[in-house]
Image (tube, rainbow, N blue to C red; front, side, top):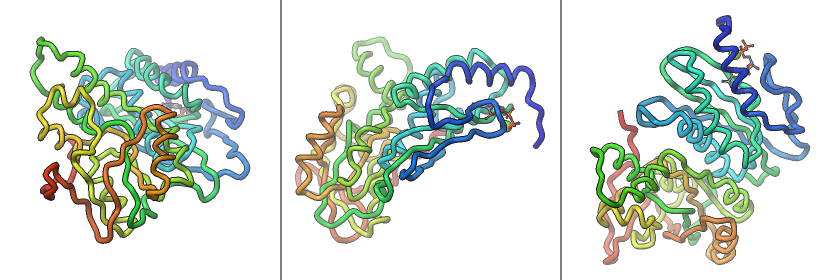
Length: 328
Ligand code: ADP
Ligand code: MG
């Protein structure tokens, strides 16, 4: 558009550049020129993804800037994790109602807390005026042909999920309740933390290369996302409700039916859901528990289409929910 970058925007970009400094040999030229120049390591494939967070749509209005910075990166790292890719670079497009350096400082603090342990370098971006919106594009490496995809699940595979399910949806529910001062506040904090600061399962994704037949990250709810694996792979899945991993915070604050609803259909957990041949189950579970977080077997891949959920009494549950709907 030829919009001149204002002095205020230039200051913000300089602040971002300084705070996010992350030396990497493969960044030939980072923030400051018209484009970044990057060297993809020989013999690696590039996995790229972009996700946008809009104020009041993808995070509640009033979310702390540091939490927005963390989450905007985490949802993208989660996409790389689901591909088995190793994160390297990011681009950040920030749209702000006004040139607000306090917001940017907080945002960058949360961003860096997650970027640093992954040695992810911010190599460029764009800064514009408008309703608060954050887009991050990430780039990662994967050995040729080893990217995990949604295709490839086979009848007889076991279905696993990392971490616990339903926490983020419960965290959102907690935030929408009037303030409470009784006990259980540490449980509520845990759930809100799972909403605001999801863990991207990057190490798990890398460990699943050449192990998993199919993989996806759970952003829209287990039923919806496992449904995507089923569609892409041309198979069906059967899930046991009793096997779904749920945190003690979720079970401590919600009755079993509500907790199950959150675990099946709640979004924003950013756990990995993946399929492995039954013969590899024990090894994969051992590998992932060594990395922390672990993985739980929740069901299996069957012939057919769609996801069915078996209740504790063995009967099939009505799973009409189509998953997460963004709140307005
Ligand atoms: P141009 O007009 O050439 O696109 P900009 O003024 O938009 O240049 O950006 C100047 C430099 O700052 C570029 O290297 C760009 O990648 C970087 N940059 C701009 N905004 C951001 C941001 N939010 N995060 C990281 N880098 C940014
Ligand atoms: Mg620009």
